[in-house]
Image (tube, rainbow, N blue to C red):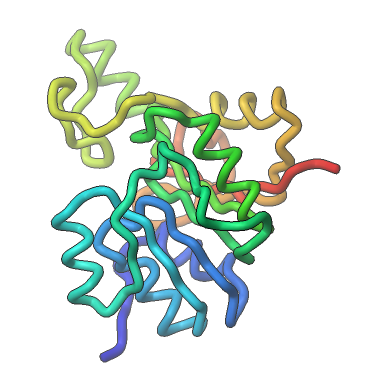
Length: 199
C-alpha cells in the first residue's frame, strides 16, 4: 500500500534524505515519517519511541522500532552508524536536550531537527491579549498537559547552534501550507534544520 503524507514537514524531510540512506528516527511516534521514507526513498529505517501506544502503531505499520528513552542516550549505536538521524517534533519534549542532540550528532552523518516555533505571531498575540499560555492550532496543548518541556523559537535554536559550533547546513521554515522565506521567527510555525559538526 502506498503512503502519501499530508504533513508539510514530512514532505520537506523526505526531500532532505538521500535514496537508500540508513536512517534513525528518534521519537518516531506512529512511524508515519519512517514509513514514508521507506516507501518513497527506500531507506533502511529504524525508529526509537518511548510511548507504548505509538510503538504498537509502528509495529502495525510494519516499521522497525525499538521501545526506548532517547534521554538515556544511544549506547547501542557506534559513531556515524547512520546517514541521517531525525529529531522531528522531538527535541522540545526531551528532558536532556544537549545530551540527546550530541548523541544524535555522534551516530549520524547529518542530523535533521524539526522544531515548533513558539515565537510565531499567533502565540505572541495570544499571550498579549489573553494573558495566558498560548493554545493555538500548532500548539494545541494547555500548560498543564503539554508534552513539551522546552519552549524555543527559531532564533533560540539558531543561537544555540552558533554558540556550540554546530554547523547549520540548511534551514527550511514552514507556514501552514507552504515554505516561507521572510521573517521566520515571526511567521514560521515549524522549522527544519540540517546539522553537522564543524571540523
